[in-house]
Image (cartoon, rainbow, N blue to C red; front, side, top):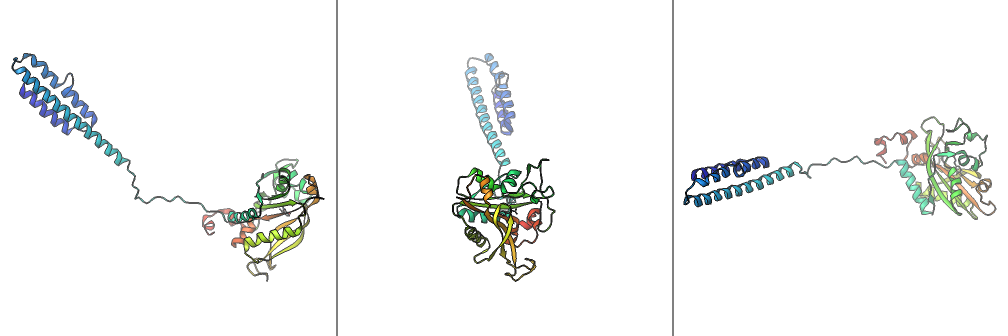
Length: 341
Ligand code: DAH
């Protein structure tokens, strides 16, 4: 029996050192220490031993059990450690591998120009408004003193949604003047940038969708001199101190008097060249004193209040600001183009 016990110890310890993984260790535990295991089988034979031998074999059997149990515990711990190490290695993050840089976008040149302009107006105490691109004719035309039958309302120029031409894609941001008069207490000082839509063919200077920025000031005692001073400040802010402007008489239904504002050609300094088509000046915006009828239609007394308004074309502004020669470049969104600004 002594030899058998020794053999079990040797075999068990040997098997445990070579065992791989928790499942195999459990198998070995059952094999040697389980109820039907080899050690238990031997212990069952103790009854046949002499009274002298029995305690000695008992002691030896206990010793063998302890040795196997100890070795089993060690092997289990080693297996767990190995499993953890393998897991860590598999999940390891190599922070030295060069990363993949996400391709960052670039601010569009037109929005660079718009943001500069917003900054200037905000600095003068203006509020920036946004309004609907799908607009009612009432706002786009009627309350801007542009009656039914006016050529601006022509079906050939405007995208209408309804047969009765009451709903349309706004053709100008000027409707925001009416929205502002409706929603704001006096005095009013707002700018409103946004998209506008017209049935134009695409070419170097036209697009069926483009952007405008509208401005409106209404207060007591507001004059054309304020309009000139404000616009000159904005234009100098955009194009540099000393930039020359020219105010020409014009006609718009919602302003009286009306004007168009030109800026001296940056290319030739006013002499006349290809960029300004020989004019020496480049047209920048429309403006004027808000028509008394327009004020009245929005419930403002033109005897007490006066105001002025303007509308810039944003693409044109950016094109001049960055010397871009073709409007199509602004909408194509080719990153090679956009990255230059
Ligand atoms: N809405 C006009 C256009 O699209 C531009 C304009 C002219 C706006 C005069 C104004 C203004 O506010 O006073 O051509």
